[in-house]
Length: 418
Image (cartoon, rainbow, N blue to C red; front, side):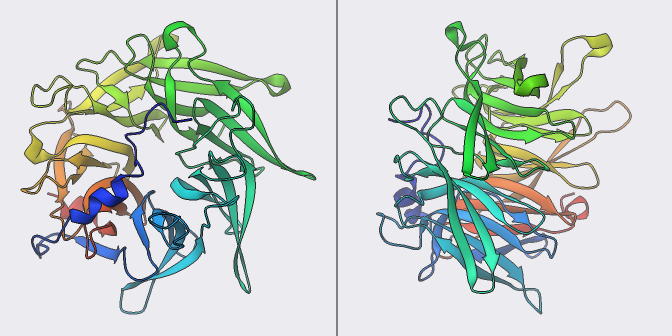
């Protein structure tokens, strides 16, 4: 069984990124720093998630390949980056996947609980071959991996398959996520973890409820929000909500259906900020410079007097020199600026860019700035950004010293990207 959309981190991309070579030195005037280049002996290749942080400021993430050679390019691993005296960062490999019942190709991102345990998913492997959810627990003798659930239960895979986005934790340590065309909940119990399907997408005629769901986000009331890459009234994706109801039921609602024109098409993810949802669309926006539009950044806010939510396009991408085809969610710093990545365009090598969008003030439109252009040596094909301590952290799928990805930091972004 193949997932409906394979353009996100296809397996063949690990071979394809190897040609990305160093082309130019970093510029001294910016605040960009490569914290780690993947691909050294025994290291991971192709970072497949952004960075999350523990209370001590250590960063955690995943690589799609590398580590164990039981798979063609290695089965992937989970790593930790820790800041050392003098400011350098050191990598520790926490777990290497074997390609068996523990899964392989970890991707999408991790969740961390108050005790420092890490949770994630693999899109392949597991008991049924179509992905698994796992937990990594720290201990005196290292980290211990436990497979919590294997997706695609025979015969029909109605519980989902090939998960590609980070799980979300609630205060009771239940996990929420998407796999294939379902939104699920995984709950711990005396006999292990059990799955509940919260909603099956594309269950309405012509997929007007959306198809191919992306990562979920959760608000303080327990509501879940997300985006679907396809489906909706114009088959260009939707923004949706899942709300818990009495008796353990969940109510599904399409908040906005993209029309594939100036409003964008194929949303990547949704981020909650100040009561509104923000995100990017991979295409659309009306630009004639790209075949189906160069993408947008949008805000979805509550309508007036109980009316439907209202979408506002904050930026339409183009020309290519300013970055095009955004990927993944946007992330906010304390100053209120949003950061994200454009997977294509940017500088001379077209290796992608990090962008910033800040409020225009006094009724003026938002201001778009390129925070960093990748040149191959410092990374290429950026996928994710996150924020921590007022700085921006992210990963690229390619580029760097070995051509297979980096972790980077942009420090003090409000001052650095004028």
